Image (cartoon, rainbow, N blue to C red):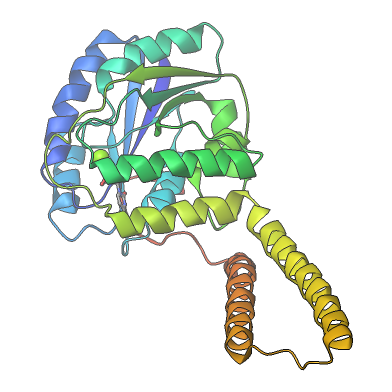
Length: 311
Ligand code: UDP
Ligand code: MG
């Protein structure tokens, strides 16, 4: 029987873990696959770890890795993927917003020869309107400025072959933006759409500000367009400056009048100063990324695990 590894990042999910496992046990019975669960406790501050220990005692196929602190979902995914041993690998949220019922359909598609079966939400019902608006805008912008295609509404929930996961793990960058990495590796991908679900319990760990920062991460990690933008802005303001210099020089010769307009001068100085700082900020963002890459710090630190082989 083929083995499927399920990677599940968990952050403060004490209420959802048992609900999730109950649902998954139903799916296990439906599929001709041996299941292996790899829960990653991403430094939760609630009872998540003890729930995971209990689950691991109760079920043979439940494994967990627990971090020394919160390292973020990207790090949790990486740790989980590294620990997988199955021929097929899937990544799921524990809150049932990634419906386990889709797995049989996804498995069927992968047997048809696809390498990746992705999922996307066909709607964003139940989400704040303003969040949906900015999410849409983010995908429009990133797809225009990045060569890596990112599908609007695509979730991290996907079924992959071992070959794909090996490719993903070969990218050893420290700044990991999964949505980009999953798509960057390529392979034949098939998307299944589903209606957005509410969380089974607990609360989302994302607020507007954290999503905003996350989207900037995506842009900086997968596009150099902001650098081009800074260059273009710099060149245009030089051109404007040269034209206006000529203009004022000539009018001064013709009218023999010193050019009035101190207030406008102050505005221009302020504007250019602001522009310079802004462009410096953009460049700084990339330098910051280089800094973290160069340090080569590990993406996470494991404090406890019931997996024997190296995680
Ligand atoms: N998560 C994580 N580390 C974090 C934040 C979230 O491992 O720092 C996990 C979380 O437990 C869940 C998944 O990532 O399984 C998605 O998080 P959440 O449901 O809060 O996000 P949303 O579905 O609202 O986008
Ligand atoms: Mg969720």
